[in-house]
Length: 211
Image 1 (cartoon, rainbow, N blue to C red):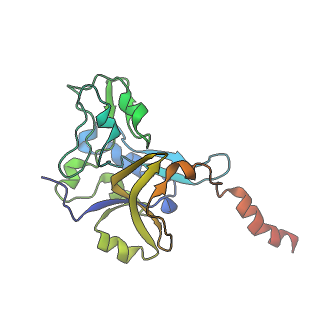
Image 2 (cartoon, rainbow, N blue to C red):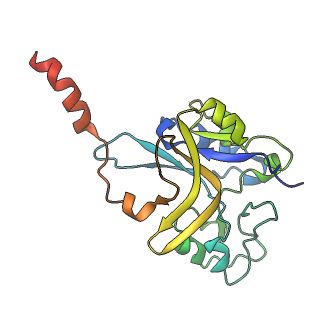
Image 3 (cartoon, rainbow, N blue to C red):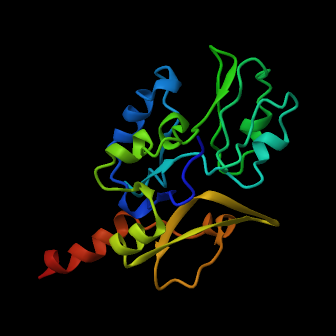
């Protein structure tokens, strides 16, 4: 069964609290064999505690599949990019190097690339992915756009990303402020934006200390 067309995956980085519930839940998905296919990254560990859950974005034209010489990575008709098929994967790491989002990870013990497959055994029958079902802050959410518009009136979804000259459209949405004019997230440009770190807190509390 395909993933219902009405349901989509939404990532809201501003809500992530770094609790790692998503990582633990991912290991419990029946098809993952105890292997977590989601990672939690620190945006700038030296200056900020901000974390970001990294899942497969399920690109419309997945670079990982395009560079796979063994045709081990398949995209289903409903837009979900599956993890590599073990009988075909030759552990060449092409997909790991090519993915602009840095998602695929090589399991050297199994000689197999493994990545988020949107808990296909669950989402294809209408259930939420494991990570979205346990996220206490709903930084990871799975539902309809109408539900998200009602629950997040100050945010809206964007699913188009630019990496230099390459533009990628994805099945997974990232939530941005509703008043933002952003229709495309320029990832390369964002790399040079300053991190909102501890210095902001220093400014906030400086007034109290000096009073």
